[in-house]
Structure formats: structure tokens, C-alpha cells
Length: 126
Ligand SMILES: [Zn+2]
Image 1 (cartoon, rainbow, N blue to C red):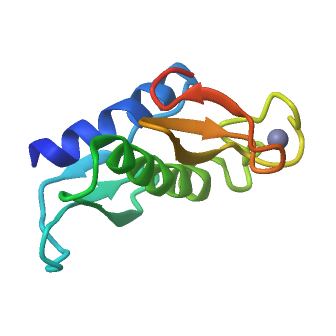
Image 2 (image 1 turned 90 degrees about the vertical axis):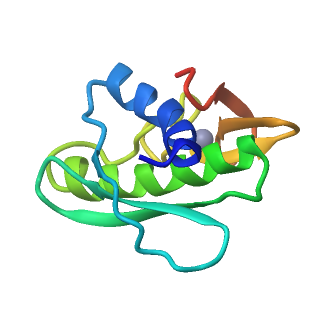
């Protein structure tokens, strides 16, 4: 597995495990030919797969936020849709409306409330 991509995915996978969800199984397959991108295929527990890619030239915290966004989308579609509330990670301010959003704040990758924009936790620190 590409080291840049592994490092970008590690924090969100830690958050998944702490939430009782399964991190995707990663297949080391470059599917994105765009120069400068590190890519792999993520397999969800239900057998569905999708690509994940991060920009090697971006700062590390931006790669962590980008990877978290892609893993979050796959997790909601493959593990939560139809069987549980789909708002992972749950927003403490609005626990029944939306999930948190993966983004950056300064030099950190963080989960924020999409409504208030308040930072809830660092990605990897849920
Ligand atoms: Zn909120």
C-alpha cells in the first residue's frame, strides 16, 4: 500500500473502529492516472468497492480530510444506509439531522458541524 495513502487513511479508520464500524479493506490498485495522485480501491464489508485517491502534493492534513470524506461516504452507503442512522460521525449539536463534515482548520484535519462550522474533533480523535 502506498505510504502517503495509508497515512491519509489511518485517522479516519481509527474513528470508524472507535464508532464500532468496520474500516474498508484496501486493495493496492492504482486506478487514478492523474499525475501526483495516490490511489487504491476500498472494499466495504457488503462487498461494494470504490476508489479512494489523495493528492500527493497537498499538505498532509488536507490529504487526511480528503481521505476521511471518501471513507465517510462509502461507510454511509455500505454500512448504515437502511439499517441505522446514516449520520456518521454524529453531530453532537444536531444528533438527528446531519453527519459531521471532514475538512481542514488551520493546519489540522477536523470534523466540523456543517451548520455551525464549529470544530468537534480532530479526524482520528473522535
Ligand atoms: Zn451540527
